[in-house]
Length: 258
Image 1 (cartoon, one colour):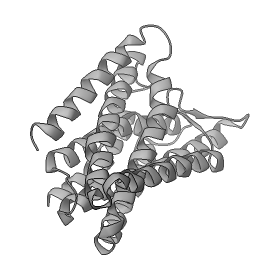
Image 2 (cartoon, one colour; image 1 turned 180 degrees about the vertical axis):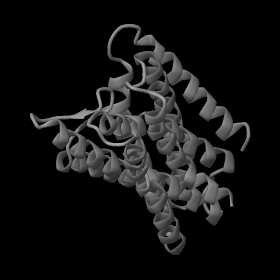
Image 3 (cartoon, helix red, strand yellow; image 1 turned 180 degrees about the horizontal axis):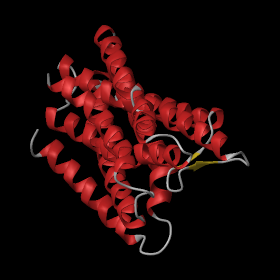
Image 4 (tube, helix red, strand yellow; image 1 turned 45 degrees about the vertical axis):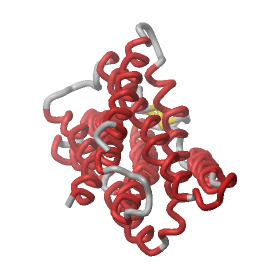
């Protein structure tokens, strides 16, 4: 049941963000957006180290001095996978809720939904890999660490849900339909997590590669999307402070409670 609830938490974050359409007319304020983004980035960086890369290396300890190799290879596959994804799908500007390209508003919104949905797939896989490692008992992953990772991704998903439902509402779509548009963009996360858990349970020896793949994918998202977003405009130190808060909280949860 811990794994079941854990894989649903990121989807809940997207759904709560989409629910903003019921009580907000505009997007989240800059300060709130920057704080949430910085906090989520800090959690995801810490999770990539303590919940993904370190367990991947520890699980490969039998390789001796080459124990870093599975983590190194998986990490780079994750980075390159997200790099390819960014070239295949439109690049998302989460802060403005727009995507690149001189398109009509309807086209931009449609592309934005596609971008958010596809970017949610590796995040769902990351959650699935962590819980697969936790359930198998073959990787040094704690329940607290897996839960903290889910929470960090959920916090990042909150503004993503809002930047889909609010523009849809602005185009004249009803509140309920706009809400469900935001919700459905996040449904790929629990699906991806479940499929990853099922696959990982069959190929436990590949867990070091899968864990580090998830780390590479998440760090790509952090550096490419979250850090630039939290550093824009005046008072960018708000994002930096909340990055430190998220990082330290994740570190405490994963180490002290583990």
